[in-house]
Length: 364
Image (tube, rainbow, N blue to C red; front, side, top):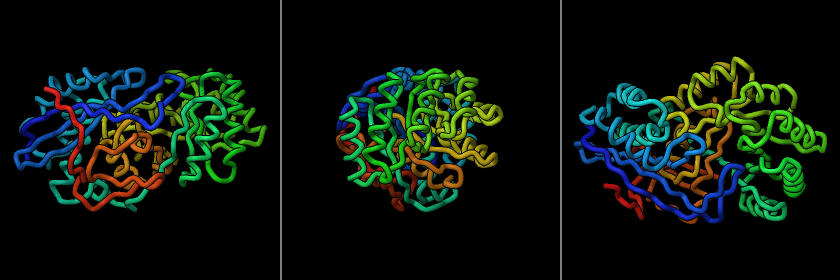
C-alpha cells in the first residue's frame, strides 16, 4: 500500500451554541480535512482546525505546508514503513503542528486499514470505551449554571468550566456552578492563560477555602511563563495542568524537571500528530505524571484518532476531554467512533473506521 496523492477539503459544521473562552468566541467548526490516497484504493482521513492564537496554524498555512513541504516527501512511501513516514512528516518543516497532525492521523488510519485492525489495537490495545467531560463556555453566571445542570442531567460526570476573563466574576461563576452540581460532577477549570501567577493563586486558594474541590486547573498563566506556573503549582492544593505550555516531548521533560505542573494535556494539534503524543504519554508514565487527552474545536475525524490513542495509552492518559463533536449541531461523519453523550466507543472497523464525510467542500 503506497501513498499516491494527498487531497484537501473544507468541512464546516455549526455549533449548538457559541463556544466562548478567554481568547475567542467561535460559532462553527471550520476544519481542513486531509485525504491520503493509496495505490490500493484505500483512503486515510485526517483533520486540522485553524487555531492561530494557539498553534499559529491557519487554513491557508495548513494546506500550503502539506501541499508544498509534506506531500512531496510522502508520495511513493509504503504505509507499512510507519516510523519512516512519521519521521518524514516531522522533519519536513518547522512548527506547523496542526498540518503535521492532520497528515499523521490519515497515515495512522491507513496503517490500521493495511492490517485490517482498529487503530487502538495497532497501538497496543485496551478497553475501547472512554468517558469525556463537557465544556461549559464563559457566560453569565445563570447561563453557566443552567448549562452545567443540563450537562449533568444528560449523564456527564465531569465538566470543564471556562474562566479567565474577570477573576472576581470567575470565582463567583465557579462557586455557583459547584453549588449547583456538587457531588454529581467533577469540575475542571480552564483559565486559557487568563490569569497572572498571583491572580491564579488568589483565585484557587479562595475557591479551596470556600470548600470548592476541583479536579484540576488548566493553564492558569501565559504559555511561556513556566516559572509562573511553577509558582502556582507550589502554592495550591488543586492539581495544575499544563496545556498551551506543552507542545512536544521536550517541553514535557522541562515541565517535569521544573515541577511546573502536576498534569500534562496532550492535544494532537499541538504535538504534530500521534507519534509525538505517544512519546509524551510514555515520558509522563515513566515519571508518574498523569495526562489528559484533549482537542481543539474538531469533528469526529481527528477526535477519533485521539480516542484510539487514549484507549491504547490508558496507563498514562487518565482524563479525557474530547467533547468537540458533542458541541457540534450534527455529525458529518459516517462510521468512526460512536459518541453517546459522555461515552465514546470504538468499533471493530479497520483504522479509524471512517466511511464517508458529508458536506465536504473540496479544495483545488
